[in-house]
Length: 240
Image (cartoon, rainbow, N blue to C red):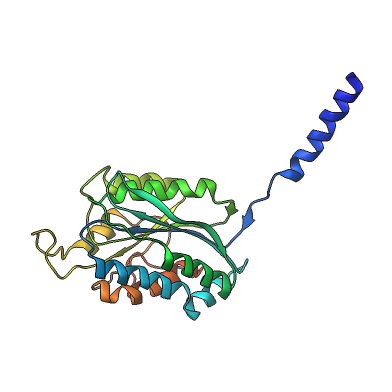
């Protein structure tokens, strides 16, 4: 009995390493953290979602993905509003071909949309950072891409969360949408790009590209994805 028990233990020990899945090497792990607060109306939400769908399948973005050492990246798409609402819309997916990019975009186009109260940029970044722990991938670069149309009015200050994540080796880039209309009776926030520059983006090579409006969102997110996926150095405030 003792010999059989010892043999079973030895076989289990030998089997353990082979049963553990090795992490997939990718050139970039990227969390897309997208604002769905109530300040974004239905038309703007559609423009925002379509901007990501079209950007992810554009030939220039796909060329950037295939130009890296591993010729693949891992993407995770999340949505956020107040501290009560951060969700994963599409979990980690390895994009290594036009067909993989198209499948991701089709899932995104079909995913239901919602609208929630408040704007918690800091909580959104903290939630996005937790996704790296379960990506099943390894990479030299981990990036959170935050897009939104407002400043934090709920939860922890964005800059405190930003600094903590940067210390962990995570880079945060920004895509502020410059609203040209009033927001729940408040005047347009003409300084949102400066807020993102000072309080949201951070880490080596971090940058920001502003969209002039949601009509301009598709152009901005396409330019931003190409810069993020590319391994070329970037400046903190990048022209579109």
